[in-house]
Length: 432
Image 1 (cartoon, rainbow, N blue to C red):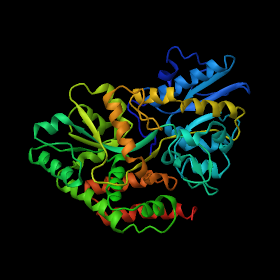
Image 2: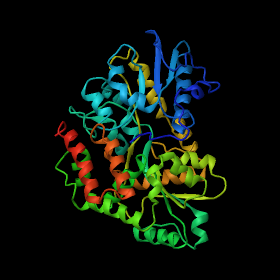
Image 3: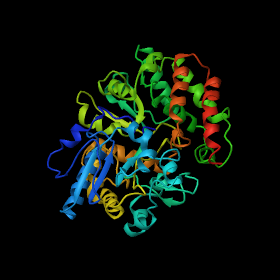
Image 4: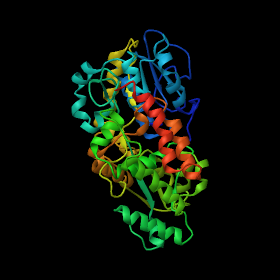
């Protein structure tokens, strides 16, 4: 899923990251190659994001441990890395460590094709299995087919990502509403807003949040075995079964009832987040990664965050993985850098900046909103059910298009499910 997912104020060229003061990093650039004695790092998260700041602090710590080391940091764009990753990693210009999208269709593809290093020895050396909860390790391990969840360590996610419900407490108090803890209450609350002329849910149909909502709704009717069949190819999936059908029909019902605006088809993920942050929408169902932005930028109202009401399974996983190319000449340094990011100091920094430590540990985290999103993670981490686009390569665009059509009414729920079935079945054939 952009799995950092799309980032607020994404910096493509990377000038802002290079301007971070006091890190002492050498050779920060947007391209080029480095010599054999240079440690080259590629990251694509927006420099303003918590994980980017934590990674820069980790690089500073690595530099402190190795004062003669030359670090060549390069800021990349997500699509640049995702689209060209395989080609670059098979060339001499590959970095020593890079951020990559998690899941079978991305990190798993690299592992299956021998483009990234097996990290099992480093996982044992640094005891990453103890540092990362079992659920968080799921996107770190891949089998011989490149399917995530078991096998050897090929990456490390040092923060989790998941769908959650943000709500504007001022809007809720205005109409005498309390935080929705059941699905029925959520629908009742949204109906109250509609009855008072307010569209309750800010949704971005022009990007991944459209299918995120569908999958979160489908999970309301799902068991773990269904998730394993769909995401891990353990069995056949009925695209017109009760889970997917409920998700598509309920989403269409929400549009019909005015819970979602039909104009949502033109919105991007950050547009929907901006609507919520500016106080124009009472509810946002989106990624945990927006918590950091709301923590720093929302000043005019109080807000809260909740697990999706009523669910036992939740959309989410470990976040983007840090991987080490097979061609890296500095695998030991790459593993040391990854281990630094998992240290209590760096994980606490991540929490205080508004992201969620992969450990789920709130020790040393002072901000109330930061503690709240960590608490949500700890409530749901055993129920994380991954992301649909983690399953097969290239699954995001057809899902975006299908759910745009659902929102604008040009496709029925049944037609939408047919539209997302074909690319899935084509891709899944490689993993069964």
